Length: 168
Image (cartoon, rainbow, N blue to C red; front, side):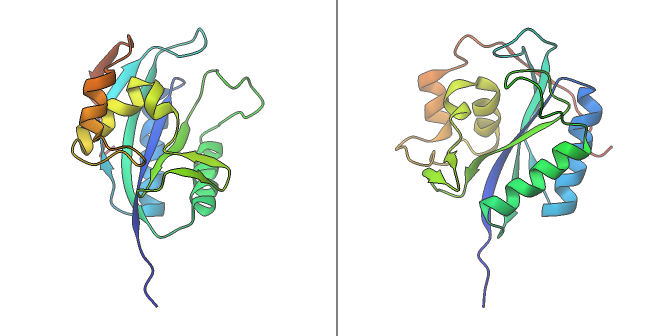
């Protein structure tokens, strides 16, 4: 029996000990999923609350795990990095990791809307995908990530690409 591996796009963000937490998150993702493809890292203002600037990126992984199993892995990585789930929905984060796309699936899967709605709201989710897979079709749309970026742009959000040593 062959298990099919699919591509997942994961968003990572942190505004508490940002470089350390993003680095730890990437290292943990490598342990669980193997080779990663990482976008450039962007700095952006907090969205929905007053807080320190975030570092954000997209990581592409291959996995044959169910979405539920992937989410358990991601929550464990967040928890291992000091994630406090008792705070407000929009607040500072040591590490936040979300599944943005799960293959080419579009719709509700295991209680999660895919692609993740933040893709259409936040430039810090869309632009890193444009960097990685500009000509890939957005699940559920007849547009590529690049075409979506051209039609929506940064939506007034300021992004600054920052250097990041992925090998630390």
